[in-house]
Image (tube, rainbow, N blue to C red; front, side, top):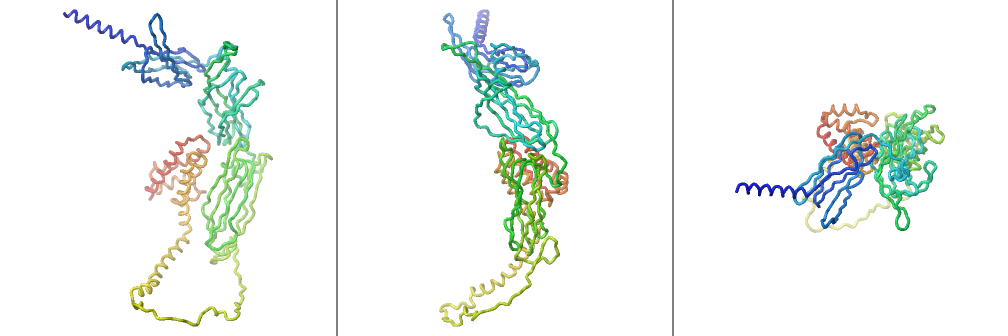
Length: 592
């Protein structure tokens, strides 16, 4: 009996092993050694259908195609066979020996795994120059080229880089995607949106080609010397002709997957000439007009007017400062509101206008000259510096208190000629002398509660009016406090503007930087001209702000400076906004 039992168990185990052996799931590679410029095909093949297929992480490879799924059914000698394959096309990221890890799938409730496969990646290999080889045909008939409008610009002179894909007449492109986009770390950059690439006719190395412009970018160099523009790389599916023909005699096409590169470009940036450079030059390069306009030139004391300094034209509008005006000391001047109406296109680069608008409140009667303001720029056409002046503007304050203190900034004038007021006829004729009064019947109003309330109300209001008037005078006299309150309002407003501008990199970081600067003015009583990083850090520490919070605040300022010249995603902008709001809140809590 025991022998029979052992035989039964053995037969069961053998039958189970045989049944299990019927299912196969394995990984196959097109080659175990390849050059870094070649592609690797990996097939995960099974002989029975399954569910929940999980490919491995191709850590050292880039997936440029797949997964493609193929299913095959066949009958041989009355026996049915089944095959299902998941295929991936991989491009190696570097040199070395790498492992294609295990893939898994579930078949009939069991989990099956492939065996890891090792692949060796060597240096780039020469492709065979065979006119019948699809890879060779593709490499000879498609080219990605970076065209630069100027390779020796001045500092802050706008140039354009254009990426063109050239394709020969007998070759086609069915699909493409960017693998790696160029970074412009030493340039201010702006991409030009191309919604639908347009096919154009041109030539490449003297041969006729068709081409499409895939990407255009306007660049403004921010450093001198030799700068590199990194290459653009594409994964592209190419349709190439074969030697086979269809029944109508037309050539059949085959698909080839390739990675192509636009070679890096070298830009040599020249410095602006020192000869003839004005003392007030702040880096403007292009063609500009400059004007100063006031909303009014005659007004009363305590009324406000606005002075707008505007630069119009084409050039690096976002990369220089508008001149700072000098106002008479008797005028109360608030921080300017900066506005930008700038477009960027491939022909003109940056063009439009930028402006600073100051709100000004005169305190005393008199005449106040606003001195002429000069703006200078480097003209690329004449390769020389030009200077534009606004001219003097005279502000007349007609009515208001007289400033008894001597001031060189105001020209006061009082009309001493007095004329006698002459009357004609009975100028009091409008006063009636006859009355028709009648007694009021009913309760006696005099002595009632309402009578005493109305009688005493004005007397009680007098002290309140005096206190209110004193507080108002103190508030008006507190010039520093008014400026701080104005700066605090501007900080909140710009922080709100930054939130509205999420997604627009330039507008967002300009608004965020202004919010931070106005916040510092309100909290530290510091002017923009004194805002060095060292001083800001020292003042925050003196006020008791903790070191991590100070470092976080300084990091946000640093991000605002770098953001104009580096690619930023909307997620990063959202993170910077949240960090700014949280840091300002922490500074408020920690500051003594």
